[in-house]
Amino acid sequence: MFAIAKIGRSLSKEAYKSEVEELRTQLLEAQLALKEKNIPVYLIIAGIEGAGKGEVVNRLDEWLDARGVNVYAFWDETDEERERPRAWRFWRAMPRRGEIGVFFGAWYLHPIEEAFKGKWDDADIDQCLRGVRELERMLINDGAVIVKCWYHFSEEVQRRKLKALARSDRSRWKMLPKKSKFSEQYARFEAIADRVVRATDIGRAPWHIIEATNARYRDMTTGRTLLKAMQDALAETPHNERRLDDSPSGSNGDMLPEAPEARITLLDRVDLTQTIDREDYRTRLQTLQAELNELAWKAYKANMSTVLVFEGVDAAGKGGAIRRVTQAVDSRLREVIPIAAPTDEEKA
Image 1: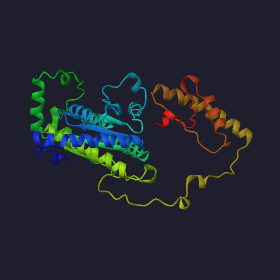
Image 2: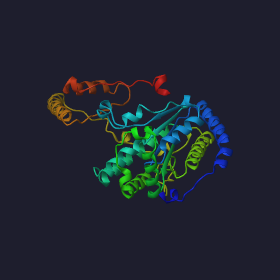
Image 3: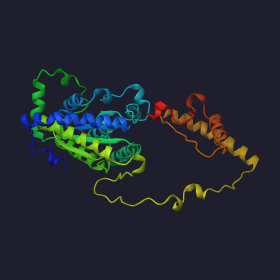
Image 4: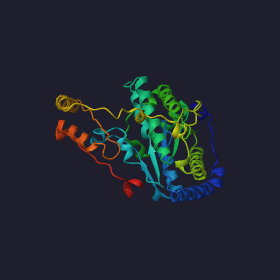
């Protein structure tokens, strides 16, 4: 998959200068139009070491209105982040509608690192990538535009660029956290990255493989890629009227959804006539609450979080069910979170 990024593409200074101003103007126009239409953009920057990913983002910062762009590096996890689901750190960085969020590595760096270190087997990787596809599908169904750029070049080019960086006075590069040794095992890293990219190259969030051998070509291609994605989003029907194809590229996912009246759901099969004897209820409730209390403490000791979601029609007894659960679990181990209608801040 990365062969297209080892050709040696380049862009001359003259060609770059002749195109950059027009590109910048179009990017600003598209950015303003997206803001007016409240469309959020996720720009994911990932790739091989030494490819100049930071330089790309700095260039985009010059071309775009920085007031509507936020950049997140996702370096070492904080203690607060380690206590929560892994996706929590990304949720807090989600761009508001109409803004652009630039994510270095995003949710791809962790699975690549774990596989590279040998901590994850194939099943672990596949499970993680299924979650990634589901996350991106959810964001796109909510109206987001996801642009994923992977920067790559040959092993020889990487070796040359890293040596040049090591000799330079660019202290910023030397001070960046070095969490891996990807460059020391080029072939191994490339194989893992190829698997991750192929598995997440989905219909409405494809990967754009960009050769980073030449900085001008790299930056210009990134700008054009972002511009096209923004323009395509502006030309589309509203997100609530479109359907996401979240299948990996090359698969058949063209089945049309059934009409609502033709669907049979789980709720249609629920037996609403079930009852239980009062004395039997009290006995079983006491037994189950004791078991639940014991399991809650075991989960606490195992650092395992549990989420219970209560949903249903009005007057169905959700509040009573919640009370029966909270009576069984130590108050130090639980929290009840009522979810009301979204606030203006949440809608943004």
